[in-house]
Image 1 (spheres, rainbow, N blue to C red):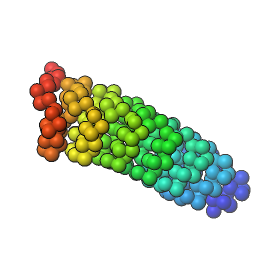
Image 2 (image 1 turned 180 degrees about the vertical axis):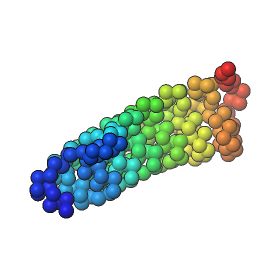
Image 3 (image 1 turned 30 degrees about the vertical axis):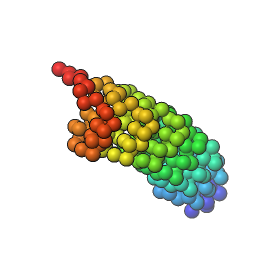
Image 4 (image 1 turned 90 degrees about the vertical axis):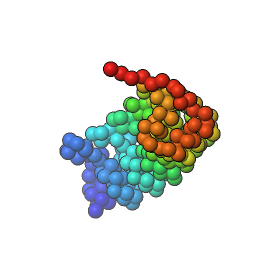
Length: 220
């Protein structure tokens, strides 16, 4: 049916009228993982970088949905791998937060691995917070600064400790993460692990000589 419509000169880049979406056919085909349809639309000169109402491109959705084959098609069609959505989240962000390793590897080869979201989160924070050890290791191998901070001065170690991800914490410490770095409230990783009842992570941080006497900032 899509092929028939394209032969009849259907506008391949027309957007839906639904204000909360404003998607093109390429967005829809990507979201539902229809590789053959994506290929047809790209051959018909679909705009690979067109954004919907949330400023998301087809590549964002393909990365989020872990569709490796569609990601390959979009990259071949020159999709902008560093384009952010309305919150500054790139395709690499979506692959990192989901732990989609194969997709992440495809994107990492072309992407800026330290680009941050509007909130200042780089891919390393996303992967660390969600416990995706393999993605964390790839980023560290790419020489991403292990102590890179977000907008409230949290590092990947803060994020991993808060989430209770022991193996990620180990990997970050092995890469010489600053164990006593403070966020905007003066909290270190051991504060976050303790508050969230992650005993194994607290023990790990103490063994690595975390300072348990760091004072936090109490407002009000």
